[in-house]
Image (tube, rainbow, N blue to C red; front, side):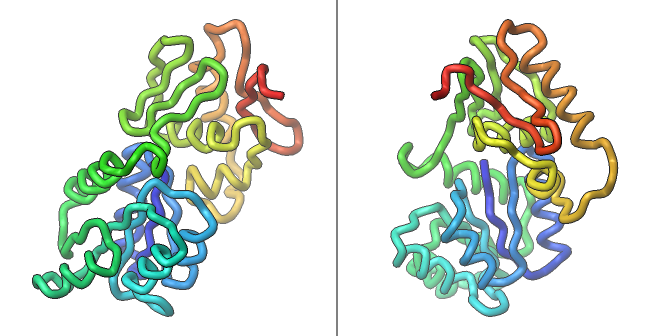
Length: 227
């Protein structure tokens, strides 16, 4: 899943983002309502997680604006306000679920997965495919030519980013931000190591290589049949 977290509490946001990434998901984070609304309006996500109380725009205001713009991405509201009236208010504002703090991460993850399962197929992408390489986003399963490929969570996330940008160059900066949440270059070979492992798993035993290195630019999952 590709998930947007809008949470201004640094500790809470780090906890959620780390847990979701370790579970193999792609996560973007905004620490205020204005940036969160911008991302939700301009990017595609499978599900949103919004704190109710946020700087600039609160979580309910964000959801209302999204629904007014025809964006139906499922939204889970996080809040310390847990009485019936507050929960009803959140759902009536357009939220799809409401989770009261404190909560267990396992419950948060289960609720997000349930929200995505309930969405109609045209509203949530559940499968990515490039040539004979297929990624099931719900089952977290990758296969090529019908052969299951076992990936570590970070490898899965890396491949997901590349497949979402199939036949496009994905820069090292993009990978550092989307896969490792680095907003700077740590000057390590972390990307090269993971790309090498991923290439071995998805290309080594097959006739046609799909993962390309674009020298001086980045990497690309390329469909040979693409026009």
